[in-house]
Length: 515
Image 1 (tube, rainbow, N blue to C red):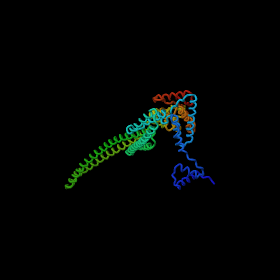
Image 2 (cartoon, helix red, strand yellow):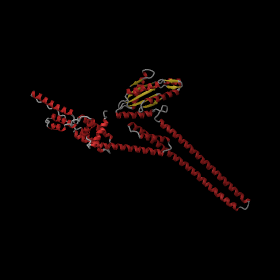
Image 3 (cartoon, rainbow, N blue to C red):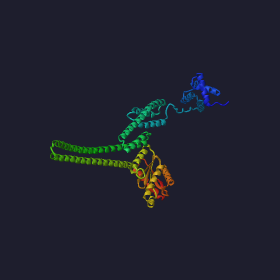
């Protein structure tokens, strides 16, 4: 007969429990399971008999009390090994007492091990953890949470804190902390909703500006991602760019409104003058018509016809002048619109080039300054390492003399492209001079940063620059330094440049050095 699987035995055991209307206690389930599996039933744990033994155990000294507590706990856990250890402890204690009595001495009472108390080292570490929680809580809205934290920290630093009281306080603290964390989550969702509403409203107000629409879409997508600290820095920059763009559009809209107002005023003046002229000429034509009706012959009609022709010519002349003036206004309006579009493109280009190098699309000097300051502040705040590499392409002058300046620019673009493929997403690549690059490696020690540059050199060798039918292998020289605590940005950049100079002095063909 094939052996039954464990799931089959378990299902059969549950069926028998339901059939026999037995409560699904662990004891009943174990009995029915062993019956179905064909195993011999285990003898029940003699808790009642062992508790009778526990009731008569000696507990006068502190050692006896401690052993008795272990014995009682082993009974509660149905732990035969714990019971055996407690009995052995009693036996060992009797041997020690007998040995000391034969020598006529009484053994010194050991220091009591109070299980009801928390060790001081553990209490201090727990207090420090609670103190680090405080900055995460709003002092105004989580005032009660601050009070509970202060009370709990003070209690933990009382030597030694009682475990039962500490357990009760931790339960209350955890209960209150659950509400505080939920409040924090609701605040985050509320801030996220406010930002989303503001960005959406800004985009709807400026639907014809493609740059602002792109910024709004990028920012809305970024709002949905987890709010890590680097991501918040990026959100801040994107929001600042969006608001500056909105202010610029608002300013230009005011200027355009004033200009359109002037054009409309001039047009109205032209039309009013034309209307007055037409009124005068219309009155003259009406007078001529009345004179024609009263004329008796051609002699009377001739001067009237001359006046009529003069009035008609005057109307035609005034219309031509007004038409020319309106056409001039239209041309000026078209020129203004073209000028605004040209300024718009220039502004887009200026915003793009404000922090990025136009050739390599890496950060420029301003972008490097802002990015390095931001990464140094984060490294100081979180006590993480930060490394900076100063880098240059070797043999670039000779390359320019042989192939021309266009290939020099292609080499720099190729270096930037390969570097971005090798470096991590959080690393920053900047070009502040014609043939000088910086690489900011956050969270990396100097040795790790040096390994990253070695991988960059290997990748440049694997992916040479292609020029017509020629493959040009590029090599770099670089110096890597690790930031010191509270070191100014310019000092760090100077140390990186000095490390680069040291690397270049070691030989030709590209060298890497660690400062």
